[in-house]
Image (cartoon, rainbow, N blue to C red):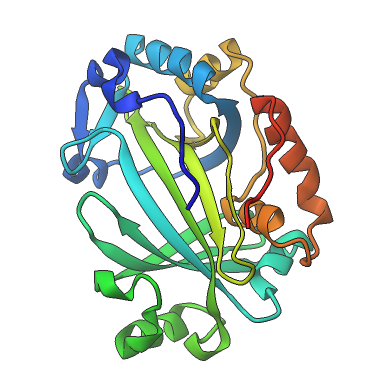
Length: 268
């Protein structure tokens, strides 16, 4: 995977000074009328966003002793890249299949994300052994779980794109918003062997209760951070596989490059 040169957020006083929220508390936060929005910015702007969030009373998730957690994900797809193309071709009902490891704890899951024709995303997951992160298909129970919750079967898909990133998770005082902030995003395409880093780009996802006003939207507006419809999987494939049909996603790549003022070039 590419090296990641980034601001050491785990050492910044602004993050250290945020009150913590624990995983067991996060489980009690239910957003019944949830609206999801994604935003794009850079690490320098993020520092100011975190300072405003701390001033407004946001808490930061503390997991495995840190507020700046590392994640690795491995996306699966068919040999013909059906899941990628469903997204590219604007199919409303679509799925993604991945394994994910929480690096601090080592806990590993098979996850199935399903999007319906109303734009709602639901995620199902089951825990697997850490050794199965690279290929869950040797686990019969995981294969059965996939068949029960997906239109894809284990023998129809294969490991495609590995992603890594570091995440900060915030919750507002009223517990009507959850915010995930992904930095240090990098990708490795298992088909082409190409790797790439998004350098100091930051992807923010806001999950809010649609019945209440959003504190974070006001903060993001203050910092001129605009929404973007983006999939980490689709951006990673677009950047690392020149043979795949990806015209729809190339303008999003250019927007990321404009944000970080740098051309993103994959390495072989």
